[in-house]
Image (cartoon, rainbow, N blue to C red):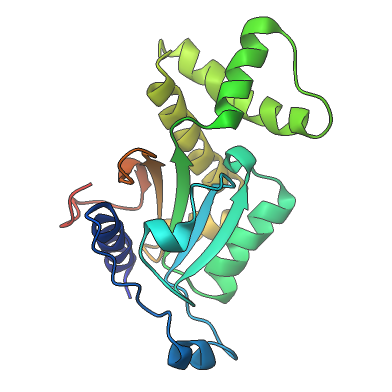
Length: 207
């Protein structure tokens, strides 16, 4: 599967989900047995841990389709990067997706911290501080709307991922992998493209 085919396959599943006509592919007993010993996912999905962002549901996929990595606010650490590189390098996934969503509590907490100067306690503070840099970048560019701030955080995450992972950056440069950033709308279930690296032409499936 090419990176473009993988992206269009993912978007097609999201369109089925938003239309209320999911096919629930690759969720039967035969597929369960087939994937017990080997997996061939077509995409690495790095998304927020939000309970409303269940990847296989919103993209209408099944067992063995997606290699999913999730953290609050889709913030990255060494373990996250290693997991994404595992999907790209060892599982040969042609597509990497950064998935953010509206009404993100982590983004809201970062905005509140910058406005009021009071950060959350414990390790939540570390997560919020990592998102705060995206909020500051958005404000510096004159973007204050919640959707604009979220889009900036998604783009920042995409760029940071390519900046920190030489393996991934090389595969994108060679045309073997595409990295995209998607913004998910909780109300209608749609995933909209906000960033793309290595995707040089329009996709046939609307976003």
